[in-house]
Image 1 (tube, chains in turn yellow, brown):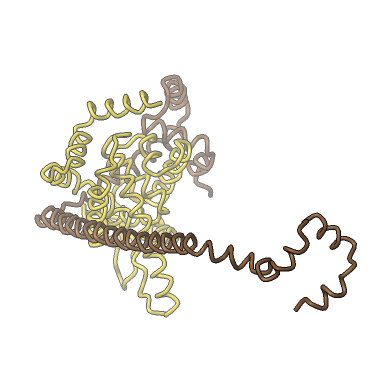
Image 2 (cartoon, chains in turn green, blue; image 1 turned 180 degrees about the vertical axis):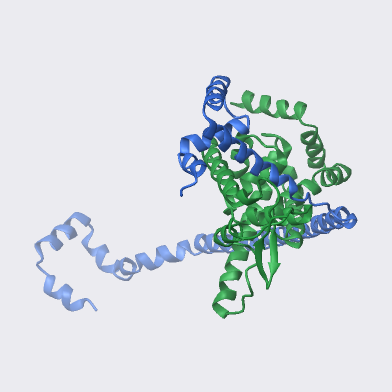
Length: 223
Length: 170
């Protein structure tokens, strides 16, 4: 068993330069830590922003992730690619944050202080994307907004798996390790996520549909 | 009218195999099977294409770029936190040392108490023996008249003078 652990450690150490950097961080090399922050901050922010939906929260969470990495440095042993380890921490931090946000939202709802929900539901999106509504061609920013709304329509786990697959190019096995799920569960999650996205984005698949904001309502028109 | 592609995708097996095929997660023999069906089945092929196009639309999502201060503030935050950790460790070490000193002092006091008790016990031992022997000492004169201890025991067993003894007892 010890031989196996050692060989795994050596395997990742030789394969992954970021593992080697992290081992330097373990030896209190501050420059190595800064280098890791530089290498991963953009990727981490992208993933976290798409999971939690807010830039400011994503920045706070990314800093929390780096802080946890630093605090865990002394006990770090390479058992996977560095990115898998980092995004496992990120996934845990994001899940905790979403749970807290959800609790706060519940409290606000109880107090009747909650404003309009920014995220579109599947039903709203389906209504907006109804073929009966007029449509016109989407520009890039508008398309990004439509896709973001489609992403918001996924549940938390589907969204996380989708983001890790799309933006990090992770394999099912890596996503499973990151999210502490079985490979089969990831396969199922991603298939449902993709199916939901196809359904939500169906009106835009041939390019040329966009939400038409009139009277605060979104409609679609053909160019 | 039901969406025929959605109906196809409602089949979990079909949905999972198409997505796994697109993600390159199938073994070669499964890939071949999917490709044969794609060549033969128009609806199957169209469904795969829509899944792929919907996935490609995600490329429209922006990649978040950290602002120029993000690295600096992150490293500073970690350094500050690390300094706090060091302070905490120092505080804990100091607390542990104080506790150890208090424990040592308590042990010394306890040892002194035990030592004092032992010495006191030892030095007062002859007195305790005298107190235990006091009834014998007080009646020494009578015991001397009897001369034979066995005789006294037998006298006691026969209870000839029990009434006198009971009367004499306090």
